[in-house]
Image (cartoon, rainbow, N blue to C red; front, side, top):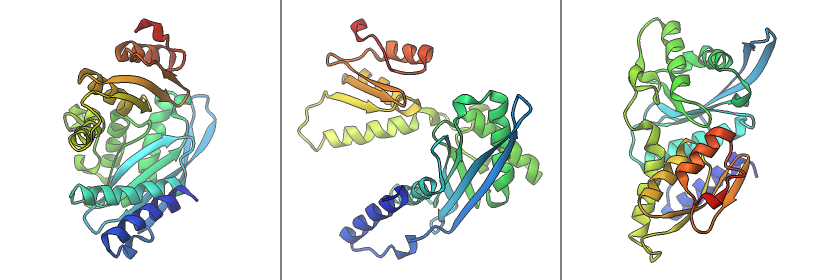
Length: 268
C-alpha cells in the first residue's frame, strides 16, 4: 500500500465511523510537477523533481508545507496534502489542504544552491500560489530563511508585496512569534490533555522519534515539565538511557556531530 493509499484508507475508516460521506476527497484537485534546474557552485547543471499538490479548497485556500527530502515524491506529497485538508478541518481553520516537496538532500547543498533551488520552486509554481489560492509553509528540512527567499521571489515575479503568500517566515519578514516551537508545543498540549484522561501518572518515561526542530523542542519542553526522555532517534541513529538523557548535552552533541548517534549517556 502506498503512502497515499494508506492515508486515504485511514480517512475513509474514520468517515465510516462518523457516518460521513467524504467521496469529494477521493482525488486531489490538482497535482503540479516540475523539474527545477539549478546551476551548482561547481558550474554544473542539476535537475531536482518538484511537486505541489492542491488537494481540496472547500474550506479556503490550500495550505501546507514544502519539504526538501531525498525520498520526497508525488505519492508522499499527495498523502500529506490530503492529511493537511483533514487537519485544517479538524482544527476549524478556514483553509484547505496542500503540500509541496522537492526530491533533494539539502544537507549536500551549499546555502547558495539552496537559495537557487528555493527560488526555482517558486518560479515553477507561483502562478498557482497566492494568499487567496495556496499558502505554503516550512516542512522537513525547510527553514524560515528558505521561506524568506521564496517570498522575495514570489513578490518579484508578481510585481507587488504579498507577505501572506507564505507562513513560517522570519519575524523580520512578517513572520509570527512562536512559529518555530508551535509544532512541538501543540504535541505537548495533546499529551497533557491525554494525561487527564488516562491513568499513566503525571511523569512519564518518553521516547522521541526525530530530533530536529520539532523533536528537540518537544524533548526540551517535556524534560522541563519533569518527564524523563529515555530514548531519541534521528535519521542516522538512536540512543537509549533508562535513567534519562541530558537533553541540553544531547543537543550540543548533535550540533557538533550531526546526529544523536554515539552520544555518551554516561554524562547523565
